[in-house]
Image (tube, rainbow, N blue to C red; front, side, top):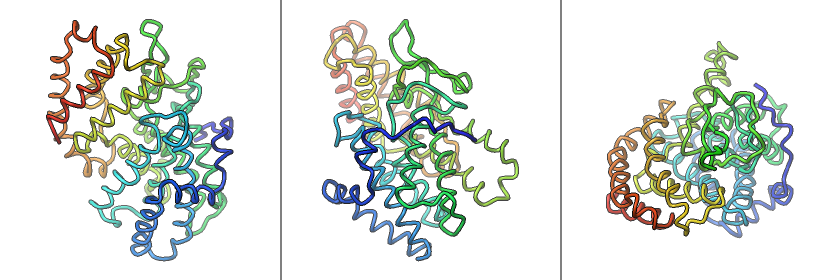
Length: 377
């Protein structure tokens, strides 16, 4: 499938952080823990899969370092455009959190070597770009297509040969990573003139369309729409009806679904981690909408996001689409279900209409956190 990525050129951040060597030096300076973790996990990876995979592991680690530095700089804590959710923190909660949890539960044997490495790259590459114009191609969002384009350039910088057909499987990394990132698209709607905020269109309605030039509020989309992965998987099967007989295509099909589950597995994490993700999303959304959390004018928007928005995402929109995602995180979601309902019910009691009118968005957030902490978990 053509994801139409050619129009997404390098930005200032990419041009500034173009070197793998410089990225690793910056990592050692600012996050010395991460190279140490990569070395430890890499040694375990080679012990299980064998030293023949050492060149592929090295290139993957180089790409991880470069993509992490760009995430931390462009929209993260190292730069001046902090996105509370779509930053290096989200990359790490996938890479060192959910993916590590999957490995601990399944063991290295649960996936093949390329799958582990591709999922690691997905963790740091799928949200590289967050401020693209609001446009879809075949249901895939502009942020995701721009991230695919940059991810491919990162692979080249790390030494992946798009024409290689050997044990390293370099060419597969370009194609499969593109499908994985595309599938992480969430439904997105244009701004509503009635409410002056971002709403959601179904991905079917958005296929092949361009909706104005407004930027996507990715924090809103991530918490109020469903992943494109299932629809993309159906299209993949139509394109490759005999994919089960091809190990590369079979791997790609599995990863389209699994990476979507990893991206949305906050529902199955410890309850306070789920709460933290909601808080980071609402902070990012309000920042993207230029709304002051210390103003009473926007408390209703924050309240809606932390009540109806959380319930809609958790109970109606989210679903596990892979067996592994369900096996690893499904029980956690079941345990979080009554806690989330209790939390939203109590927040409604705490903020009846007359109190909400004189409260700030920040006060709503703090009460959300306090109540969740009392519930525990």
